[in-house]
Image (cartoon, rainbow, N blue to C red; front, side, top):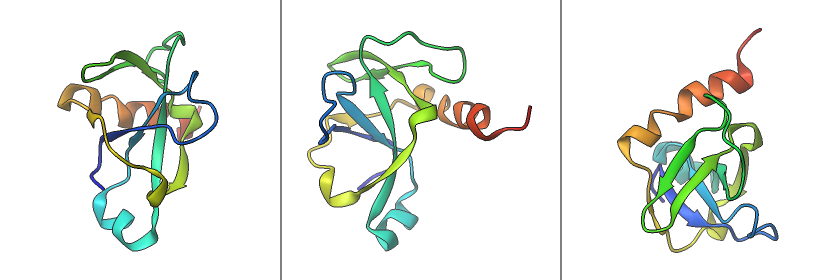
Length: 103
């Protein structure tokens, strides 16, 4: 399982959240059996820094929902549909800083 791979959502909210992006580094994932992911929401409004637009190759634009970060059993994530671009990867850390930063 590679960091920044995009997977179809194996859960029940596939219409609202069709994809999950693996954000955890490979070193940790290989040892825990779980992967930290961020949902990619369809039909959502982007929020500056916290929930930016990102592209899913061949599928269009989705909102990276940093405030909904969670861990999922790695075995549930199958058949990646693509990988986040370098430009979209750069949006993750600022989004996480908004979620966990001090205000």
